[in-house]
Image (cartoon, rainbow, N blue to C red; front, side, top):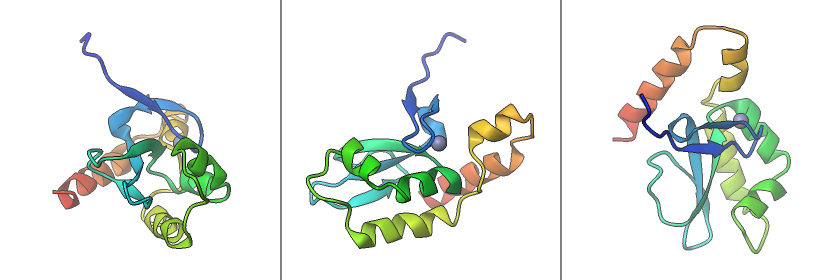
Length: 120
Ligand SMILES: [Zn+2]
């Protein structure tokens, strides 16, 4: 029960959450910014909820991402577009929001499982 669970802060809503509940976004050695579902890519990373809400927060203020990833230049348009496309596949609500409202988390769990299956 006392097992340590690594936690990270979502760059969108600033909620602290178990790392495995969040999606890693990484700056690759070539300066690209990409989602890293495996969490194992080399490079400086930051974390975000797998929700449209948190992605929209970040995509509407990409300076946050630039700062978090310590980028020398603003994010490339194609990187932002790729993240926007990815965001469309996520539910609109934050995980924290659904937990607070006491709604069941079945859809999110099913999505997590689907994500695991496709990442292998
Ligand atoms: Zn968030």
